[in-house]
Image 1 (cartoon, rainbow, N blue to C red):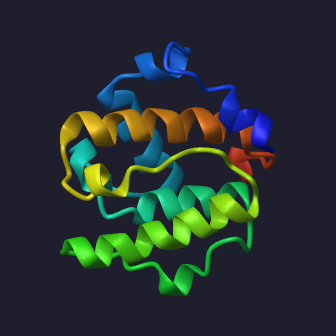
Image 2: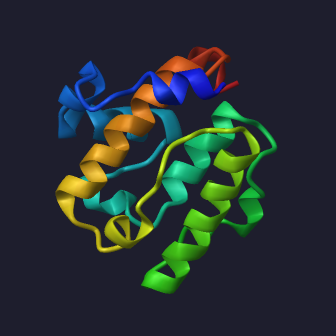
Length: 130
């Protein structure tokens, strides 16, 4: 599976996906109501998307969807990093930048995450509601 993460370079089309398309993607996929990219900073969304790609890789009961502070965000990213390591996903997640909820940092990570999902998800998105 490590080929998929390596295939998303900085000039990949994934990095030209806009904010609205990303928000629509996450809102539809996870039945959310995100209005800003910065709302992905706590890491719970990345955990959920990764769990969809690699079922059973993240103990979702430990993901803090109500995280409000940096140290709570970090715990979510530790779960994400553990799943990435387990599945040999060679993507450096700059937690210090993401937890600051800066638009550009979170946008780039969301762009990568969507591209990784598009390449690696083996299921049928239409069957997720069932």
